[in-house]
Image (tube, rainbow, N blue to C red; front, side, top):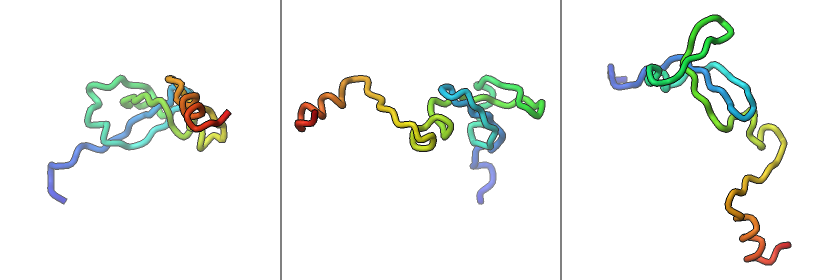
Length: 85
């Protein structure tokens, strides 16, 4: 590998806003740590915090709970166009 061309790779806490769960992992987002809020983790250290809308804790595929996200009536348009009731 070439030296000094890769972003820094450090610890970051990702928090799923819809499920309220958080997990610590490594990411290249650590390079932007100065612009991110921080959180004190279970080990007593402070890490950058990244809020995400969907993770494995809240995604319907992983949780087994199906839900339809339809903000513009797209499902009704599809059903009307193709004759489904």
